[in-house]
Length: 95
Image 1 (cartoon, helix red, strand yellow):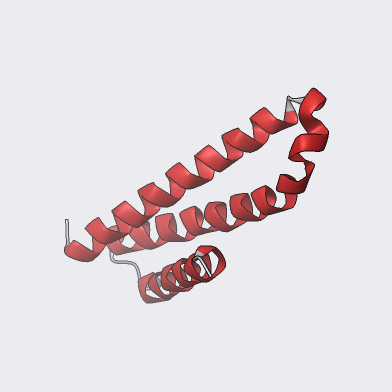
Image 2 (cartoon, helix red, strand yellow):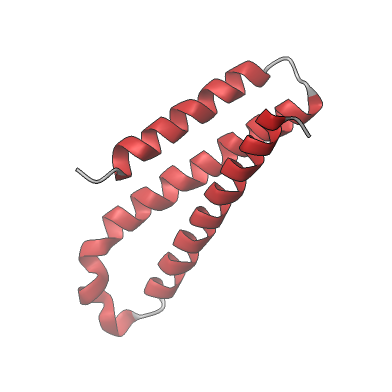
């Protein structure tokens, strides 16, 4: 495995783990109707995080796949991975 593929595997695995954890958290919150008012302020931020990290996982997964297969569109996939990483850092970096 080439170094870029290893880095992409780490990024994709981390993004998948984050997205999975956020989705499972969202599902658990949906099944707690007694605490709905308590978790209501958290819903928009949680949905945004689920969308961002699910998209990040999909893009880095595609980038990893294109790198492993040496496909012609791999540079665009790498650029999209960098853009999604930059978006996640910009959204979630402490201010």
